[in-house]
Length: 294
Image (cartoon, rainbow, N blue to C red; front, side, top):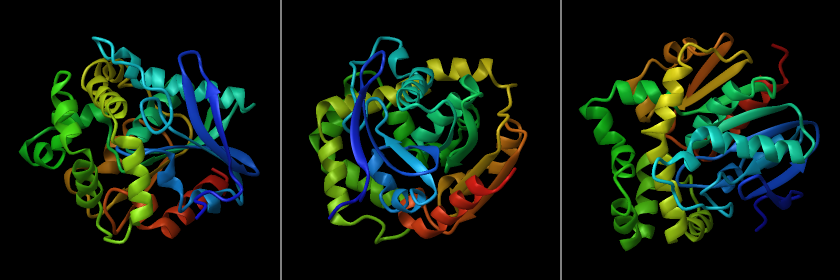
């Protein structure tokens, strides 16, 4: 089965390494960024629909999927969201796009947030799926959050502890993440799970994804603190799952109102993986937001 009919696969060179992506459709460019522990395939249910109105580009972030996976540096700066955002800007420049729409889920949403701050002239509209601001989530940590988001504190432990523990049974770990963070039992077919397993269950990916989280708990917090007063200038769409931690722990709109001047939001009756749990609803809301004059 072809997951992305009429899409073309590319691997493009950035200043630091190769980024894997797919591209299809026609219209104004739309960049889709995935989350943990996935890759661009998480968009397989809605990217072909969005391609009716937009030129859709879905990449694998540095450290994920088939993109390059550098060994983490001692201060984790090569997995800083600032450099992960820079990768994406370079890719869009190579494809000939000076401006684009941007939608990110989970880790991809955190990269998208940083990209929009650092390259405000590039992003015409921004969508953030199932996140609250990273700095707030760490500063508001309590027992309930730490229990639900245990992986935030597990993955940031010094190398190689989490890498070795995940490698011991990476398939069990990944299946547990997909199952426990979703609320729709049929969201993931076995075919899709096998794809995620193929991409995730290797030493390089597991290390790189740990480095993503280590950066978020260190150098990214410094960047976020420095930019706390800066507001996103473009229109922002927030989407999150009613059955997930974000709904239970945070006033999502209020937190993001401190960081954006033009904001709208909506929750869906699902867990963390909106694009795979409720793809039709996700597609319709994203499409309408992007096509509407703001």
